[in-house]
Image (cartoon, rainbow, N blue to C red; front, side, top):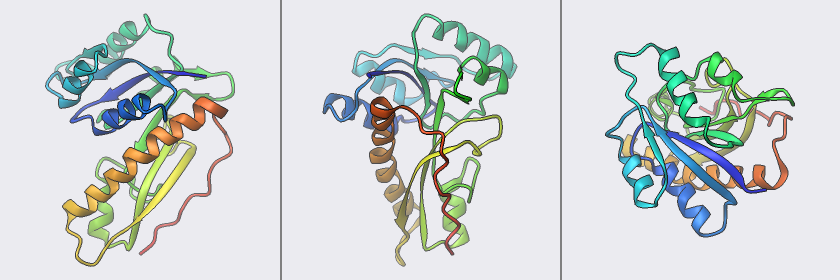
Length: 207
């Protein structure tokens, strides 16, 4: 089926752009119903608007989390969404928000991409933490979102090497290229086969 998704961003929207390109190339059978951001100045909103996508930007500063999320949910109510797709959205999603996307099969229809091989290096600075730790192999994880940060069922993981002459910049760039291939591929797999609730084998931290 063609997935109907809302994509949440906070920054430049590189994963959003990868999804748009994959849809254009017919590698991803999805319809982006809306792009949501907590930052009205996010560059990703410009990308969305350039491609004729609807956007909704609501700054979170000065608002309680529940109020902010309720206003987003009010906006999303006009769409028939299969999934909320987090793509560099730098806000923790509350349990109350997740409940609005509860699936009868026992998960929330919210997906995230994380810049490490979970369960290693959770949190907002996965690339930096892995690089500073000195890993020889890092990677990217796509997972379902649940009430615990970066603890949801893993849908896919893709490793990439750290080279001896890497800087943090080149290391992050290599990771981003993996993200841009992996995220649309996982979404396409869901479009074709649905969500598998069998957890993927979690890759242990490689040092």
